[in-house]
Image 1 (cartoon, rainbow over the protein chains, first blue to last red):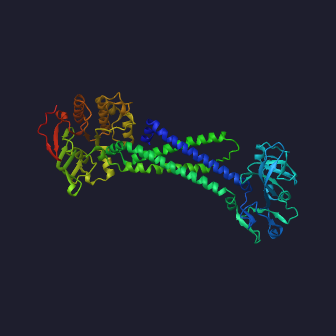
Image 2 (cartoon, rainbow over the protein chains, first blue to last red; image 1 turned 135 degrees about the vertical axis):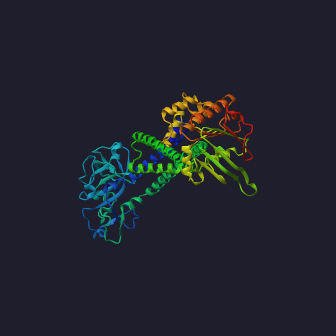
Length: 354
Length: 230
C-alpha cells in the first residue's frame, strides 16, 4: 500500500488519467443502471404498488392485461377473499381543454377490494362514483389539478380528478384509477357479462378454477409487459460490456505501468523485498484507482440526478449500485492479476545481468 | 570464519552444442572489514558471479555459504530473507525507487524489515558520512549520478547487512567521483565492519581494494597487478 500510494501521488497526471477513465465508466454504468431501473419501474410501478403475488388472465390473452377479458361465467367459481381483487384495464387518451393529451392506462377496480383500499393518495381523496378518478402524479406534472374534468378516448363522459397518487405507471403510461363500470363503458361492454380483465391476488397459489383462465406469477406477468424484457436485456448487456471494458482498461494500464517499472521491481526483489509485498502494491494500486473512480463517479451521478428533468425516468437503487460497485472492484482486482503475476515472477538476474 | 564463501562454483548456461561454461571452479571468500574487487571485461562472468554470491541464481555445482550457512538448503522465501537481512545490493542503475524521496527509501525498508535496521541517529551519521544529509527530501530524479550512487549505498547499508555486493557502482562516474566511491567503500568496510565485494571493469578502483580478483573467461585468479591499498 505504501509504494502504491507514493507512486500514485508522484505520478499524478498518469494516474489521474486512469482514474478519469474509470470515473467515466462508473458514471456511465451508474446512469445506465438508473435509467434501466427507472424505465423498469415505469413499466411496473402500479403492479408493484399492489404487492400482489399472482394474476389470473384469460389464457388466450397472451399474458396481456389489455387483451384479457374474464366473463361472468368464467369467474363464477372463483372465490375472492380480501387477498383478491378484480381489475379491468384499457389504454386511454385523457383530454382536458387547453391541456396536453395524456396517454394513460385506465384501471377499473372495486373500491371494496384491496387495490383501491390500499391505494395511497398523495393529494385529494379516493374516487367515490363512476365519474371520479384518481390519477398518477404525471398528470399533475403536466398541469392537471384536482377538480379538472377529463374526457377519455372519444367518449363525451367527463371524469373528475379527485385525487393524485404517486408511482402509478403501467407500461410507462400513467394510471387512471376508476371503477369497473367505467372500465366497461370505456370498453363498450356495458350489458356484456364480463367481470374485468384480470383477478390479482396476494396469494401466489391462487386458482380461479376455470379452464379458460390461467394464473401467472406477477414477476412473469411483468416480464411479459411489451418491451420490458428487451429493454432490461439491452441495459444488462450495456452494463455488462462496460464492466468488461473497465476490466480491460485497468488491466492494460496496469500492465503497461508494470512493464515500465519492471526493472525497479526486479531490483527490489534482488534486495530481498518479498514478492507478496510487490504484488500487494499492484493490487492496492488497482483498488485505489477503482475506489477513487467509483467515488467520483458516484458523486457525479448524484449531481446529475439532482438536476435531471422530472420526465427522465431515472431511479437509483442503492443495493444494486453497491453490488455494481463491488463488481467493478472485483474487475479491477482481476485486472491487476496479469501485472501482479509479472511482478511475482520477475527475475532480478535479467536486470542485473549474468 | 569468512562471512561469505563460494566453493568450487561452476555455472553452465544452455545445453547441447550451445552449452556455455560461464564460471569455472570459482573459490572465493570475503571477511568483514574487507573491500574486495572482482574485475574483468564484459562477458567474463562477473555479473554471474555476483548473482550467485547474492543468491539470485543457483550454481550448477559448488556451494555458496553466508556466515557458514549453505544457500543450497534455503527456499526462495528464505533466500529473500537472507538478502533482506544480510546482503546489501548496490547496482549500476535502478537502485532507488524513483517515486520515493531519499528519506522514504529508508522508510520503505523499515516497513518491509521492521527490525535490525539502523536507527535514526545511526542513519543520520551514515548520511553525514556519505555527504548526503541534505538530500533527504529529494527524489532520485533530482540527484546527480554521484549523489544517486551514494544514496544507493546508504540504502544498502541501512538494513545493516553483513555483506555489500556492488555491481559496477562507478559506471556513470568521472575519475574524481570514482576515487570518492572507492574511498567510501573502503571506509565503510572498515568502520562498519562489512564485507564489501565490488564487481567492476573499472580498474581505477583497484588502488582502494584490500584484495583484487580477476575474472577472465569464467576463471577467477588473484590479480597480480593489484596496487597497494591506500
